[in-house]
Image 1 (cartoon, rainbow, N blue to C red):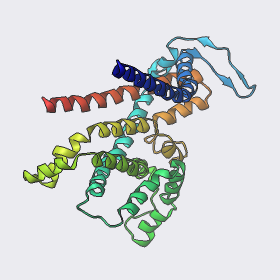
Image 2: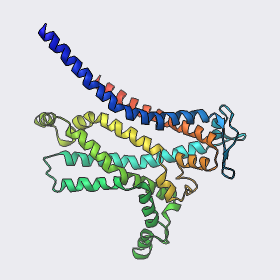
Image 3: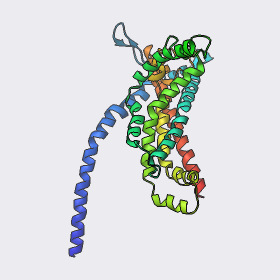
Image 4: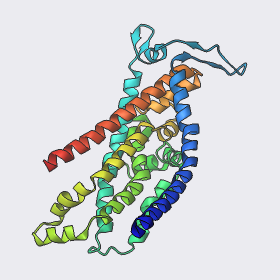
Length: 320
């Protein structure tokens, strides 16, 4: 009986301690509901209404229900098909992929190097700090810097044309489709590969060293240990990195906006979906803007589910 009384007392204490955890979560849920959930619900709600704001009078137009008319306007301009949303989605995905592939490759290599104690890399703490520093710089500052560097009269074009004579005329990098997309992708790579490296390092350092030792005893080389042990055990973190990077890529705005002065040049090949949303909101057409926001939410959620299911279905097949 005494043991049962002691056990019930411990259970009561556990319950008492647990309630403080729920109490401390209340501010998060309140902030999430006020600043995320309610605005999301209002965006979906107003996407079915025609709603304009008259900047001259400072008043809203009469709000009237239009059903799916705002969604249809995004795909049909009058009676003609409007391909812009698909064009800008393709632009966004291309620039994200161009930046993400080198980001994940470089981050995996650096994470493996810095986590391998046998390499004994000197100054590893310094290098870890340096590669993370670009993540602390605002994207707008990055874009302004690259805009000045790669302008037609900038130092890079001057170096290639006047000093090295590698090109026949001064080059404006933002006027070439390939170069403009490369600059956007390169800036995203520079800003985020350090953060990705830290995340992957944390995952690698959590892997049991005995697994590597056993594989080494069995004759596995470094590449085999990486592909057969490190990558499979890093899969949860890799999924997190891919999905969060994808969400950030779909929301790409500040870098191409500042680099091209909002034009998306050349010929709108660097215009992203968020830049398109900004153009709609500038026209004060908040109903269509809400509809595009809902479509962006569905695209992001759909692509994230595809990545998640692909990675985990592949994992289950490997186990079977």
